[in-house]
Amino acid sequence: MARRMLLALALLGSGQDSAPRQVQEFLRGGTFTVEWREPEPWPADVEIELERSTLSRTAVFPNLEWIRLRPLDDGVEVTRVQYRGETESSPIPTVTVEQALGIRGTHEKILSDLAWIAAARLVRRPDMHARWSTVDGEIWVSVRAASGEETLYESRWAGSPSSSNEIERAKVEAAARRVGSGVDALDFRAGDLTPEVRTWASRKFARDVASVPDFRSLRALTLGLIAPLGDARAWAAIPDRAPVRLRVLDEGDRPVADARVEAIRRRLLLRSRGISAVARFGEPGGRFVLLEPGGYTLRVDAPGRPERRVPLRIEDASPREVTVRLPAE
Image 1 (tube, rainbow, N blue to C red):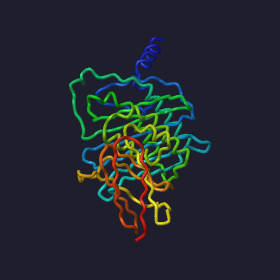
Image 2 (cartoon, one colour):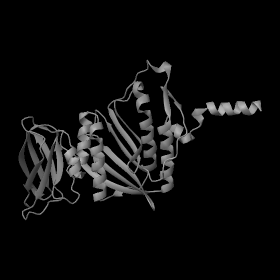
Image 3 (cartoon, rainbow, N blue to C red):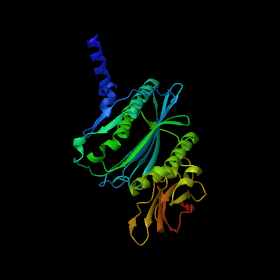
Image 4 (cartoon, rainbow, N blue to C red):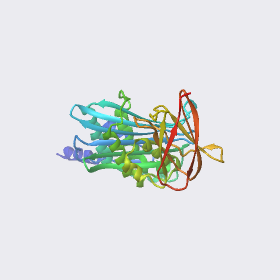
């Protein structure tokens, strides 16, 4: 009898061992301990949103991606929207929409693990207060799980990682790694910007506007991603920026679907870091956002058509519409 009581007490005090082992692997660190608490099970219809980016100081422009896992009757629809920043081979940023089909059983396992992470309590180690180390650049990570209008878990973190802030970002980073481990190996293929995807992206942006930290590079990425995708709701939520809709037409006033645009700050002779990608998605022209007032030159070109340069003056955050005609050579 005494041995049974001792065993029961040992099990009761071993909170570190109560969570599934794979969950413990995702949530661990050198500056804290974890008190595991068994969570209430989440409904199987919970949608998951993952947002992640690494903002390296050595990158021209980093990438940003939004991922949504939406349960369906025959599986899980996984939508990935990516903002790909400037590279040496591609100086114009791009926005893409991709989709894949996941398995309901895998989704339910991710939900179970996220519930464990959300319920965990982290305790800072008393001997870790003097430790300090940091890495180059900044990270941005956000995870949200919701059933209908009820948010079951939502957390985000942005900044320069260091051992001093490990405990603040540990749970959301663990949640992001867990979701990423379930979707990164999927067979993503080019998808369509359906009205449903546009509505989801716009609602997410409008919900997140107030919570996005005031890092210039992060705001540029977020605006760059939503500008080509968002509906009127998203554009109305763009704070203190000048949204521009560009229409690129040929000599017959037909849209030129493969046109590219670049905004150049006049006088400074430097390409503006405030221009987003100009994505098509079947629309005539595209949309972008300029982050600073002043004089710009829009450089527009397309294969087989001469380049056009159009002056544009930005005085305030009022929306603009610009039409550029590119006749064939």
